[in-house]
Amino acid sequence: MKNQEVPDKILIERFRTGSDREALGTLFLRYMELVYGVCLKYLGQPEAAQDAVMDIYEHLNRKLPGHEVDNFSGWLYMVSKNHCLQHLRKKSNLLTVSLDDPVMQNGQEAHQEDEEFDLIVSEDIADQLHHCIELLPEKQQLCIRMFYFEKKSYAEICEITQQPMDLVRSNIQNGRRNLKKCIQTKQRLGSGTDI
View 1 (cartoon, rainbow, N blue to C red):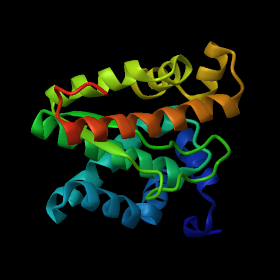
View 2: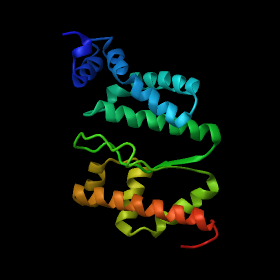
View 3: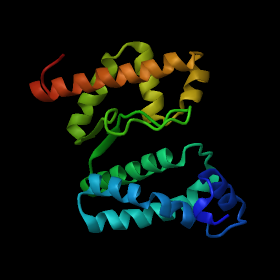
């Protein structure tokens, strides 16, 4: 079987074990258009997007061996997006908070457009974000802080809070929705107005 026909999971395993030096290249080529599309969307310039694609390949070379990946295309989408947001943050010295659904634990890809809520805010608006988090119900606040700021997985949050997966997922989704409304209201009314 040629590498082009081999499933993603097998290529990942071959790359991890070092039995196939071309496995990562084959895997990356499958999704290079996806990576380029994400980079172009966030960075806005073809040259910057091309540079980011190469950076992401190098990142995969270093990081993929240490990650369990069930859904490679969804995981790669998130890696690409996070890389671009980090690049934008460094370039403009802005605080970036990404409040979108992760690739769910069941292997389903996130609804990339429908669920997306990226907030790139300057330092003064970051205060609004933290104020809005304080206004969330306690369980939503806890889950949002652990998931977005402490980078904990759904499973880790379940273990820490002793809540079932559905409740953790619901707290994160509802918290994100409430945060979005609060921040949009604050931006409309001005930072001096309390909600």
